[in-house]
Amino acid sequence: MPPRARVRDSSVVDTRQRVIEAAADLLAREGRDAVTTRAVAVAAGLQPPAIYRLFGDKDGLLEAVAEHGFAVFLAGKHVDPDPPDLIEDLRAGWDLAVEFGLANPALYTLMYSEPTGATSAAFKAGLEILKGRIRRLAAGGLLRVDEDLAVTLIHATGRGAVLTWLSLPEDRRDPALLTTLRESMVTAVTNEEPAVQIAGPAGAARALRATLPDQTTLSGAEQHLLREWLDRLASDG
Image (cartoon, rainbow, N blue to C red):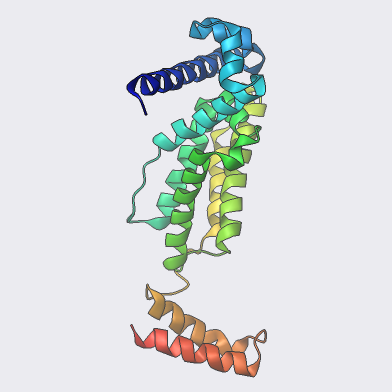
């Protein structure tokens, strides 16, 4: 790419980011209704037509602000690949998400009301962090439900906690609401004690092998084949 073209592209990126940050600031200070193309253009030091060139329309601008919100949230996440307490790590992740929502109410509401949420690169990256937490719980024998259901429960309780809190008059905002919702999520998603006492595939294989005779879903031939696989995995431990 010619140097002049690179400079031009960099200038467009910088201008776009300046507009997004101006819109996010306006949203935080005055609410969604205040985020008009004219107001944002003035705040960013541009003419209104520039907004349309960069984002298409107001909806495009709002989607970009929502994506910015996911990116800001992701940047604040701390990822411990080997936490000493998996359930406390789950609590900490949930608390972080809720605290972000309470600190950025207008932005949070926008993030979860715009269609960009499911397709946002930052949202997907954050989702992978959550899936990593859930996978570690599963590997440790601490996950009570299916991994996909765990993702849904954690997201639903966190989002519900934030939006319910924000909908309440200030004199009715009891911190016990947040604690109770978090602990309900933990109870629904995790086991108090590991379902498998020995970590790793071998321990899981032994636990599953022990309960195999009690199930009726598999045919005799399927049980026999599964038992062979489990025997092989269990012997590795």
